[in-house]
Image 1 (cartoon, rainbow, N blue to C red):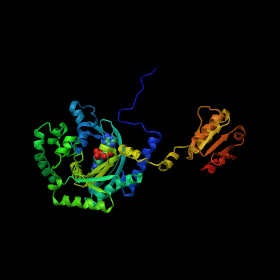
Image 2 (image 1 turned 60 degrees about the horizontal axis):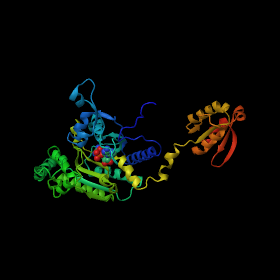
Image 3 (image 1 turned 135 degrees about the horizontal axis):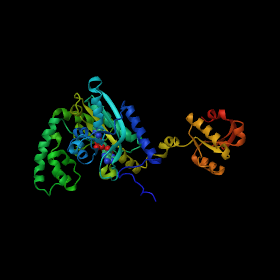
Amino acid sequence: MGAKPFTNPRGTRDLLGDDLILIKHLERTASKVAAAAGYQELRTPLFEETRLFKRSLGEASDVVEKEMFSVPRRGSEGQEAMNRGFTFRPEGTASTVRAYVQGGFAASAPLQKWFYVGPMFRYERPQKGRERQFTQFGVEAFGAQSVSLDAEVVSIAMRFFQDLGFDDQLEVRVNSMGDADDRIKWAQVLREFFTPQLECESERCADCQSRYTRNVFRLLDCKAKRCIELNEGAPTLFQVMGSDALSHHQQFVACLENLGLKVIDDPSIVRGLDYYTRTVFEVHYPPLGARSALCGGGRYDGLVEEMGGRATPGVGFSVGFTPTELALAELGLPLASDLDDLRQQLLPQVYAVAIADEQRDALFVICESLRAAGIRVEIDHRAKSLKAQFKEANRSGARWAIVLGADEADSQQIVLKDMQQKSERTVSQSDLLSLIS
Ligand code: HAM
C-alpha cells in the first residue's frame, strides 16, 4: 500500500469535463461583453506584495484581517518577514491599480478600460457559494468621473448575466459612499447613533463591537438579526452628503433607469473594502438567500493617488463565478445548446482504426500528420481488438473513422468511413486531409 491518497485543499476544486465547459462558457461570455464596451484584457500576477492589499483594501477590512493567503519574505525574520512578504491576490482591483500606476498611464493615456478573468484567493470558511480559490470576472475603468462610466460598468455586469440567460429576478442594488469629507461627517454621526447600543454590550454582536472604532460603516451591513433591528433609523450618508456627490448619485440612478434596469436604493450597501467613493452597487439574485450577491463594485476616486499615482478616478466591479454557477443551476442554465460548440471542440473529428497490430505504426504516422494540420484525431494506444476499436470509434462522437489494413498500407491508401452517412470508400492517403477538413 502506498501513502493515503492526497485530496485537494478545502475550498478548492479540480475542474474537468462539464464543470470546466461551464467555466469556459462564463469566461467567453465575460470576454465578449467586456470587449463589446471597449475593455482590454489585463493579466496581473496571482500574487503581489502583501502591503499592496493592506494599503488599498484597508487594514480593518475582513479580507486583510482574516482572509489573506500570505507567505513571508525569505531572508527576513518574524513580523518583518510577513510585512515584507507576498499574498495571493484576494481580489483584482488592487493589482489593476498597481499596474495602472506602474505603467504611468495617468500621465500618458489616463482613460483606460480593462477587464480580467482569473483566480482569486481568500481564506474564508468554505460554504455554499464561497470558496478559498474562486474565479472573478472584473472590469476597471480609469480616467473619468462621469456618471455614464458608472452606468457603463453596471451595464456590462448586467449584460453578462443577461447573456447567460438570467431572468428579471436579478436586482441592481445601489448606494453612495460620498466623498472623503462626507464620510468623515458620516462616521461621526454614526458613532453618536451607535454609542448607546455599544455601551450596553449585550446589544450589538462582538464583530460590531470591534468594528465600531475600526470601520463604523461596517455595522450597517452586519448580518446578525439583533444588529439588523438596531440599524433601523441609523443616519444615512445622504443626510450629510455634499451636493456634488448627491447629484452624482441621482444622475447615476436616472442613467440606469434610462437603460431599463430595475434599480433598488439600498443604504446597507457599504462594501467591505476601504477604497470606495461615491457610487457603490451590487447585483443580487435573491433566490440564493443570504448569500445572493453575484457581483459587487463601485467608484474609487482616491485609490490611484493613494497608491502613489497622479490623482485619477476609477470605477469597476467583480462578478464571482461561484455564486453565478449556483444561480445558473437554480435557473436550469445553461441550455445544452449554449454549450454545444464547446463540447464539440473536445470531441475527436477522426478515429483511427488499425485492422491488425502491423498497421499501428503506419496509422500513427498518418494520425500525427492530420493532427499537425489541426484535425482532432483519436487513436487506440492499448492494443485493443478491431471490434473494440470500432466500438470506441462509435462512442467517441467522431464524424470519421479511418481504417488501415495491409492492402491499403501497401498501396498508400486508407478506408475513410463517414460515421454519420454510414458510407465508406477507399481513398489515397495524400487526399485524406482535403476530404475531411
Ligand atoms: P467583493 O464584493 O469582495 O468585491 O467580491 C466581488 C464578488 O466576488 C462577490 O460578489 C462574490 O460574488 C465573489 N466572491 C467574493 N469572495 C468569494 C469567495 N470566497 N468565493 C466565491 N466568490 C466570492 C471585490 O472583489 C472588488 N474588487 C470589486 C470591485 C472591482 N470594486 C471595484 N472594482
